[in-house]
Amino acid sequence: MDLDIREMDVLLQMKAYGAADELYTYGKHARGSNGVSISIGDFATTKHRSIVPEFDVFVRYYTTDTYADEIIRTAIDPLKGSWTDEQRRTVAIKSSQILVMYFAALQNAYEAVSDCNAQKLESSRSSDSWDRAAAILIGSLEGTMKNGTAEGYMFYDLAQQHCQEFGTCQDDITNVDVNEELVSLLYTGRAASLSNSCRALEKAADEISILLLIPIIQGALSTSMELSNNENLQTRAEAYVYSRALAPFVRKRDAANDLDLYLGNPTQSDRRNIATKTYGALAKAYPDMKVDCEKIGTANSVDTCLGVVYVSDWIWIVVGVLSGLVSICCCGFLFIRFRRKSISMDLPENNPKFIPSSGELNHSMDMLEKAFSAKQFDTPHTDSDEEMEALNSEYNDSTMKNRGYEDSPTLSAEDDDHSDEVSALTSKRISMPDII
Image (cartoon, rainbow, N blue to C red):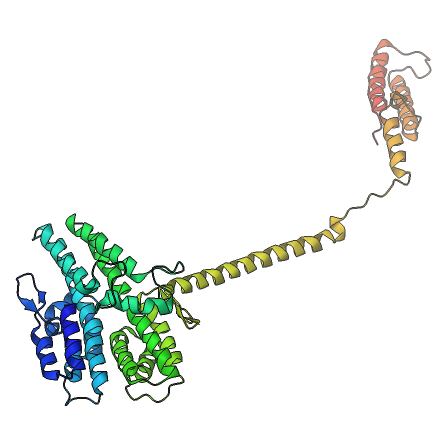
């Protein structure tokens, strides 16, 4: 396929538009699984591209599934459009390389996944589809030399064109080389295809679809910087193709409008803001494109990750804010608790003081000792005792008179018994100790 693109490039340089159109429509170097030749035009219009998840996004954006074919045919027809001859060549070649081959490669990759999932065909059939995807991405012109050659026209060569500028070449230790990662994914997919590991095969296809966007983004940023410094017709045509490849991925309306206006407009006159607007518009699109901005690299000391916010970043921001609020609440609770404790400790009832005895306590102790000492059984002489003796005397006298012994000084035995009873009662009264 890269041979067809190279021959079409030669024909366009010669302004042989009719021959270029015929080569684009019919082709001769690519062969399908059934041995039939496949042209660039066939890849640009086939309905099988719908198997690629991203293809529906382009159809909705352009409202047609033949957008790439229309752009290329307009470029190679001298009666259409307002491009110069050099711009026509650039638009036709870059569109074939980027707009057409992007979906041609992914179509074969996802067909390999479909064959694996259906399990209707042998594993070798699935492997053939994956091998075609690899051939379209690298091309035969790269040869067997390390890092390929400068003659390529496929995505492998596109990544090589910009890696030096953005510092993403293989010999740069700060970034991962796109082509090295691409080749690794192609080998991973082939092994998964041969072993019928359909999930691993699909994952490799998904990662390749994202990886291919990096050289396209690098090309868009590079042309925006060139146009900011100097107007160039060929660079303007390249910028137009890059914008057509990226605009469907930009979901934010203001960013998409900026990309169209500053990069996709062939007659843009505001050169000063081209790079700024392009960087800003794409920064808003990277999260939706699932592109890691660090893999794009840095050109002209401009950080490609400036202004990029991923969902994971928002998650960490939310977690950080919640953690901060929890910490503040905990500190406030501990402070209030400590403050209340400090205030309560200052209250008089929580600060008892020892007051030395003034002598009253010792006096009470003396009284208690006296109450429970052996002397407590000494009977003190009280007025009540005198009254009790008088009563006893009156009782005895009365008894004796009643019995006829008024003048008798002696008592009978019976009287003695009554006297003893009274004495016993009196002794019990007296023996009771006084308890203080």
